[in-house]
Image (cartoon, rainbow, N blue to C red):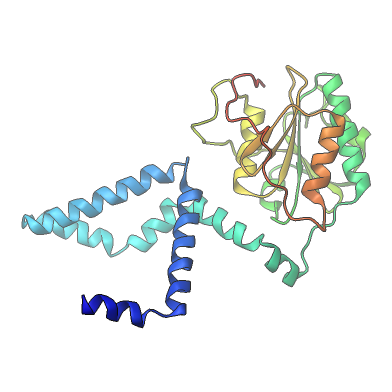
Length: 276
């Protein structure tokens, strides 16, 4: 009992701060890994730790030697296994408002760009022409844009519509808008591997969600089959959107004076009604 009181009396304010920081890091790691393949990989690593403990307890020398040599390179193994999650975590740290203000890298999105994007989306939806338009924010997307055809053209609704015409050689890919210019077209995006997505979700929507999972980009999708307009942000999708709702949401996402908008309750957890 006296030792317990001794621990309580020796407890300092910095100890409380230390505990809170560790708890916050663990919480963020669990949130980041939730719903991804990393959960299964963490379970596998936990199984290896249990096997290593049992091998030492049961004097299984060969098994113990193999497992001990594995743990000698565990840091490299973790980097290889959790590379997508680590990359996304580091990108989220770099996107914090404090770092962005210190670096002076706050994105400035001009109103006429959003106007042209909204006009193009409305025109494409009315004609039932599928489209993928990627709006870059703080995370650089050059490695994705380089997979397409470089354009470096001024943003206009007519240009965006023409790029997605059925007879255009670039209509199957995504268009990247960076620094208020159309940087590239015909680009390929990484497909989402989230198992919670419905099977009826088309390739175009999966690609949009996949890019939004890895970066902070805003991806606008026009469904070729239904003409619905959707937005993919942060691994989630908001749909359907009309002209006014789309304009308002883009204003919120690219407002320089506002913090990133919270997820809206209309973001749907299921995707059965979404099609290509």
